Length: 287
Image (tube, rainbow, N blue to C red; front, side, top):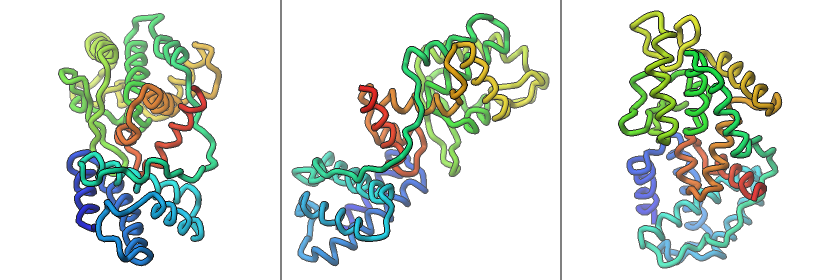
């Protein structure tokens, strides 16, 4: 049975391009489940013999341990992903996790914007065609189109952008690079910034940062926060809108439109799928 776990981990790392940290988290959770089966259900020899009752037995076992609900939810999510993979690869006839409930995690839901409010925010800089406004519009569009973190966006270099493929290469928190797609509208806004905005901001031809401030240097995290605050106010969206609000909105809207949870996890660069599941709760509340 262990060979199937190893094959799944290899799939996550090499085919789904999950980070080392994410793969390690899955490895720990699945190996713990495997040890439970070996101890409590020693007669099981194949994953096809694992039933829903077996997994629910494991969930009860975890609840008896000093685990937080969020930890149990993460472990259940890892098991669900594993069995979904086995079923998808026709290695088991049925997925026994289909009706297994994950523990409810009491967690403050992230603040998101409605799609029409996002549209107002993205187009707020369009009132003028100055280099700064072109930069700001490109920033806002890219934040929402990719769900990137603040540090990731301001750290982007010109070489990270591939307009021919409508994607960019985003170095994550753990050194792994995510390939993030963006739509044609975002591509158009980026092209306009690169052609008519950035050339007027750059002061040193050797500067390679994608987004520049008025001094021609790489835009800072604080600078990006101030930009978002200003346009949120201009669009009458209140003072609670931050760069992370666009990341939250990106995730929730992706799931609302039917995107796979694992795919959204990959795009966001989350180490644990339980972190991404919070956005599913947001999507459910907005239905």
